[in-house]
Amino acid sequence: MNNNHFASILLDWYSRHKRDLPWRNTKEPYIIWLSEVILQQTRVAQGLPYFEKFLENFPKVGDLAEAPSDEVMRLWQGLGYYSRARNLHQCAKDIVAIYEGKFPDNYKTLLKLKGVGSYTAAAIASFAFDEPVAVVDGNVFRVLARYFGISTDIASGSGKKEFEKIANEHISKKYPAEYNQAIMEFGSLQCTPNKPNCEDCPLKLSCFAFNNGLVNQLPVKVNKIKVKERYFTYFYIVCGDHVVIKQRSGGDIWQGLYDFPLEERKIAHANEFKELSILEKLGLFDPKIHFNPETRFKHILTHQRIFANFATFVIDESHLSKLQKWAEENGYELADFPKLESVGKPRLIMKFLNGEK
Image (cartoon, rainbow, N blue to C red; front, top):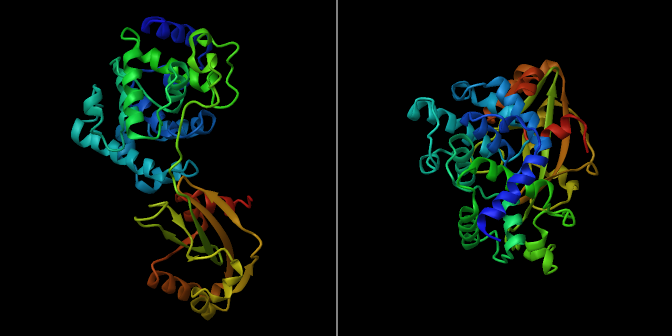
């Protein structure tokens, strides 16, 4: 099968099966960029409400650039990968400051933007400016690996280069935007990771994986990620209609988001609660303590598994000013509940506050 035939089959399939998504009906680079950043490592069903919220609050790139950081992080909370939100905000600022509010119109210059890698740059360049440069995401890896029988590890540097080369060899020069959308949509709906619909696939007659019984073996990804387990004890300190919070600094997960005072344990046993150092400091306020070591929240990140227990400390309102001083001296903040609601928080904290398990 020649290259044009491969592309034409995908384009024909796309014309009949594509989903009607809002970022597909525009050439506006800001909308395309916003959708691609939000949808990275996120399912469409989960990402669509976030996309709509961002576009409603920040209809232009200048609006996003001028927004307070806390507001951006609050709208992002629940999506994870919070460095993407910080990069999104900084990129908007750079576009306004360096490029006079206009996105660069070519792949090479787009790559210079904060947080914009080869995939996002290719998406913007092709969707907004019809530059024939191929996008390569998980869906594209899967379609190409199965169809052409490529067994190179997609997680390796050499694998990424090989797939990008093949993808660019097969992109439709006449319809680059539609082709990129088509191959990604094909991987999302037809050539899925599990139980792909091979019987009704228009490419099956020339698909290497289908004809050689390798559909479930391709693509190849060698998992080299070491997952670290961490054990947190959070202190939910309430005094009247105020709660003690802390903004997380750099050098660890959830930078810029807000959580509660915590102590990290080296082992899983939550019954070490009585040995935690913060208890002596909080004892000065004679709190009522609610702690169940059996109630544990689990949160999975790419490189980490977080196991968290929460201890609730209810302090009498007569200690409010004293607690505020203590909070400030220890790098915390005494905030009212509307403030707690308005700031960006990790999903783990939201689950606790919402009573989820």
